Amino acid sequence: MKIKNICCIGAGYVGGPTMAVIAHKCPDIKVTIVDLNAQRIADWNDENTENLPVYEPGLDKIVLSARGRNLFFSTDVEKAIDEAEMIFISVNTPTKTYGLGKGMAADLKYIELCARQIAAVSKNNKIVVEKSTLPVRTAEAIKNILDNTGNGVEFQILSNPEFLAEGTAIDDLLNPDRVLIGGGTDTKGQEAIEALVEVYANWIPKERILTTNVWSSELSKLTANAFLAQRVSSINAMSELCEKTGADVSEVARAIGMDSRIGSKFLKASVGFGGSCFQKDILNLVYIAKSYGLNEVADYWEQVIIMNDHQKRRFAANIIKTLYNTVSGKKIAFLGWAFKKDTNDTRESAAIYVADDLLFEQANIAVYDPKVEEHTIFRDLDYLATRKPEENKEGVTVFEDPYEACRDAHAIAILTEWDEFKQYDWDRIYHNMKKPAFVFDGRNVLDVEEMRSKGFVFSSIGK
Ligand code: NAD
Ligand code: UGA
Image (cartoon, rainbow, N blue to C red; front, side, top):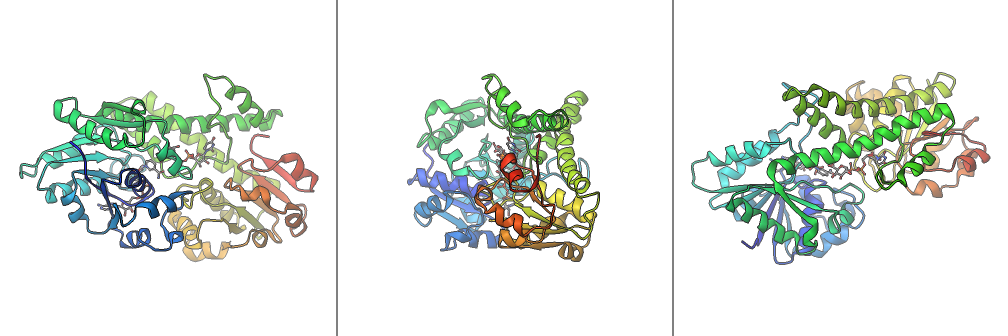
């Protein structure tokens, strides 16, 4: 079966870029991305690509190449479902905030809504593709909902998890290490897999398109994120030991990374990993393991999160301790709010938690981030609900100029590894700060010796 018409439900960080790349690479396939959020769709359709709802290097060009040709953004979910032969579900699957599994399990209400809507609208056979990250065996639940509508339509469910990382999404999509497709083992399942393989084969070598059964595919996605996050927690655990022993975590990372069995990637010590997925997916994994009574497995993976929480908390505690055990009324400048560079995404960013701890000690926080907007910063803090919105407004000021953010500050905390921080005139920043001028580099972006030679009291993670 040759696919001619694709619908994607969910125009977020995954749905937008992945479908834009499919449309860009497959001009013969009509791709319609739909979302309930009308503002998001309007932003995707905005003439001015600076207003696209997702910031990703290179995304604007890809969108411009296909939008209006074979790439469409719409709020008409039913029409897009009806017309499509293949429907991707790319909606959010956050951690549950209520009921059984609260704080751990994935909330599948948006997924179920999609399945019910597909079931209600479909008049002919369709392939439904799980693009969202889901607990293993979710395809079974989706299939149950779809198969019980009684309108005789046949559905094939595929799992096609996304491995892109934000900030490098377009490169990751154009040139992925692998694409994973899980499907049924019977003839119809294999035909559905083949249909999706053919879509990707438009630009990805077939040997990099991996096919498995559905459960392996679903579980591989959670496993990949757990392993990646585990590496960050592992190096962060060593960073604390480095600080006590005089070892340098960058040197340790380099030394172990040259062992080809370990590999050099994902060994950067930091203030802690953030992002919408690592924590959510590991908590979900822990919940699944517990639900099968696998307590040792659950405890093993939970430790990755415990270490990450510790890393964020000890960064804030170190600032307080170093500033003579009081930050009350002191201006602390934050350089960076996004959870990593080259994205405007702030979900679960370490900056939020460090800010929360410092606000608890009555610090005045001055934030500068090149891509994150003021309302997002306050939304993040208000969402914690640890203090009233007006108290957050009182404690935090957002600046558009980094030099103004740092003026008269007692300390600077670097929370995101934006490249531009290396280009700053640090002598000028030093000159305008309160003395002694402290810098806490949570991303190890600046050179320790150079910063110390300029007069800063400088500390980085794991050094
Ligand atoms: P997101 O919140 O940015 O986007 C999800 C979108 O789905 C939202 O715009 C929301 O309005 C829309 N939506 C929800 N329910 C809907 C419905 N019933 N009908 C129409 N639209 C609906 O989320 P995201 O970051 O794109 O993540 C989506 C999924 O992909 C998650 O499961 C996530 O774990 C996974 N994932 C994310 C990344 C990433 O880098 N962000 C990478 C790989 C996988
Ligand atoms: C991660 C995975 O890398 C993707 O493969 C996956 O698709 C995605 O999650 C997902 O499922 O959402 P992402 O969260 O966008 O991608 O970004 P990463 O580059 O993985 O970084 C995650 C966090 O770890 C960031 O806060 C980053 O700064 C931190 N990190 C990463 C470190 O502290 N040290 C490192 O060495 C690497």
